[in-house]
Length: 90
Image (cartoon, rainbow, N blue to C red; front, top):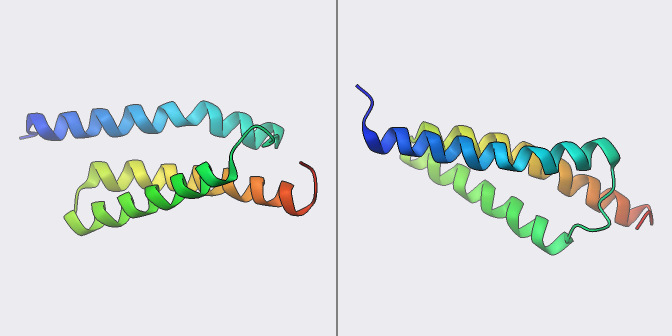
């Protein structure tokens, strides 16, 4: 039996992860990161990694799944941003 808090957790995880998809898809498709803050994406990626570790510690699947997916996407965008800076494309 799924409890109401679990349903809310999965709904929140799904909504926040899906809300990140359009930005990730656009950035990865265009490789344009000029408008993205390196500091923000660095902190965001680190925060998502911490949430993932926290979810693993709690054995909370909603937190684990959402943050694992978001971490892959955020790391991809952050890598693209760093690549653009190093290669002087920005």
